Image (cartoon, rainbow over the protein chains, first blue to last red):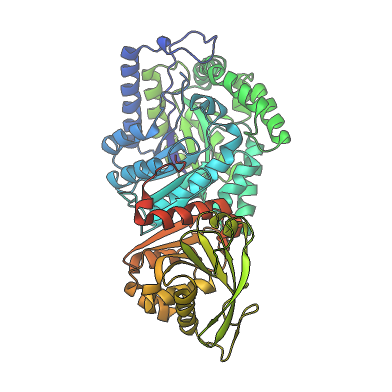
Length: 374
Length: 213
């Protein structure tokens, strides 16, 4: 059974252009910001009401691309504004944060929500390393250690010393401890070979948070499955998430017009803000483990931004069209990848609030019932 | 008898204790720290060298190992503990810090059960135990640091919980990316924890200069 996750970036899509990086925060209007955050929370609460299975948050720093510098604050509000949907924090950037703090905040969210947390452990895109003054060369090491420490902090019944390489604590005893046992399900990115294998080794769920190529995603998921088999377990559909920008309208033409413009803004304005930082980090550090991986990602990043909306629809890397079109697209993506959680992101670029709501409602009424049974 | 030099090389000595002639290494100056080794026999590793800059490290070969001989070989961990109690009384000034590794950790734990008077503070490195010993953990009041490596394939680190739960004065430490022989896999981390615990006891929970998040 396919689940649908309503994902939000909470962008600040108010600027015509961004020509410098870091983006000066004098360009953020707090009055407008207040309206945006609250509209976005309304959208997420509506998603729960409409029957989306998960609502998803993420973490980005120093950029209008996304205003959730701390997804846990949004998660906390969602514990009160939603009743059924799982709260997918995708996720705390554990290489950059205090792992004990992450363990505590995630435990609070899990307890207060009645056990609805999906705990995302994310490495973070290169931009975040500059924002938090962290050495990207240490990214994987810190990620793995923080991962292990957080799981221990949740599951050790007795206080313990953690003598790690990057963190040392003499008395770990996290209060509260999570409600879900043995701990909330963990989700990590599976978009690269290393991360897919890592996810399988840790028995974590994997997510390809923004689908760039269906065939690549299928290959990563295959790698994840075979690595899982080597580690003695088999992932279920719930363990595989694939994410796409989504817009549903009465006709294909209408949907493409709206999302096409939104994607242009997304890539050329919002994406540019973080992209510059990404180039700095990727060209000079060991954020990616091998030179081959680095080259591949840099080439793909630049090609992907330049596609037309028709290209994207044809490649099934956006869900865009009439309800029937989107149903067929979802069938294609699910069949090709085996993903059991489809993550949909409706607020792209400058799409106004009313149109986001209309698209969500149309999706919930005319798409969701037909794709559940896939 | 003069104290051994505080530079790197230990001296080798013999002690006649009970019915045994015990061979041991003796290096460094300061509070005595007796190391009861594991099944691999006595060693002098980088960790010993580093500890010897702060403590007088005494590392005997237990009966049945190396050059130590006994008239009649002590049979059980408990018997070995008895011999070591006498050794500490006669060689280490009556009371010493004790570090026990793996099998030697089992001996050290029995020592704390039956001869607590000879132990100042106790450090257990991936200690072995059986149900009889585990049943007695609650009787040990010696301040204890129990170290387990997260990658230990012989003794699951979760065993440390038992020590923490049952012993009234125990600190349970997980050493990340260390296997069974923690002092070889992560010597600096091992020495940092052990030396700080031996110096400060339970107050070592307070960060007075360790790197942290």
